[in-house]
Length: 339
Image (cartoon, rainbow, N blue to C red; front, side, top):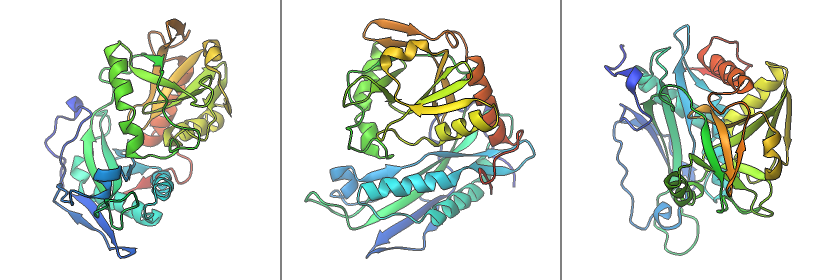
């Protein structure tokens, strides 16, 4: 088999239909066997639970071509666990974690011609998602569900390299203290759309959300966890309403075990973020996006490292984690799943 005739070096971060996707349905209390299909269209009732009450959860992960030509996925077991937790919180049936990983392998293998070559800067993005498919008119969980997983080749999130971001402290709340901020539900992202559109209109790249209870501590941004670096220490906010980012947890491990850094999860007051040397947003799409400036209602907080380029410690974290993903650096056991 040969790679598709795609201009890998000029891919954007968008959807391209690939050959196969995985579909499984939950009905009468059980999941069916699941299958690969050519059909990328979904037909559901107008009264489906996902349409009426936003009963949907999703994940995002990538497959790569390593330096030695292998096709691999990065830590899909953590995506499987997080989706299980998300589904349980929204009273949806859990898609078995071992079947989740099997679906990842099947979809990547079936679309291996779309996995970009090593060195292209592109990857195969995988989007597993689940939604309530049966009719629901009263406020209650659906009785039937569909799990799907599709793949699409994507280019690097930042064309020409990562440029430092300018973000603002938002007046909006991202998640209630006992709400759904810790799960990857579509409803969390829907509520962030107005905030990000207004941020962009005002010249900012993203929103920094404070905790909803006191509005004094750093939580995360609309689509990413946040990390701070001072000296040889990596700090991340500690909160029950933050999404447990797989990239962030991987970076914490890399910082401690590969780079010898001190790692701490703790309350980080917004008033004290000016003391840090570096700041970055972390997630599947870009791995780390450096932050150069944080604006807190007119007060500009500039990070000494990262105003013009990624800071030195952030760069080491980025290079090490992407090296692990691409096979140039030995990975911890279980992180890389070969297809």
